[in-house]
Length: 108
Image (tube, rainbow, N blue to C red; front, side, top):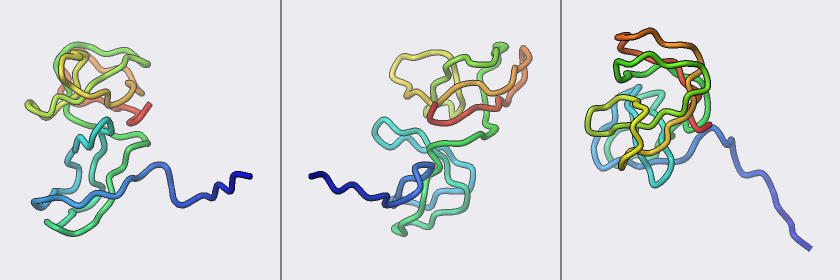
């Protein structure tokens, strides 16, 4: 018989950076895209938020609610371009053309 137990909150994953991560910085960890809610010092285990609503830098096209967005780690923003970018989540609120930030549901 299986004996599964809850071991933590699914909104976070552990993360130990090789260099200090500022609060609000997005990180790609395998297929996860998450952000640090607080500073994570180099070599110290911290947490990345991988589920929840956040506001982050975005590409300039208008975005509608429910649009899939991907994290562009090179330009440090969400985009609708897949390429080698990792799925970040879904747009939570419409974003106007040329607006530089988007509200997204991370991990959706």
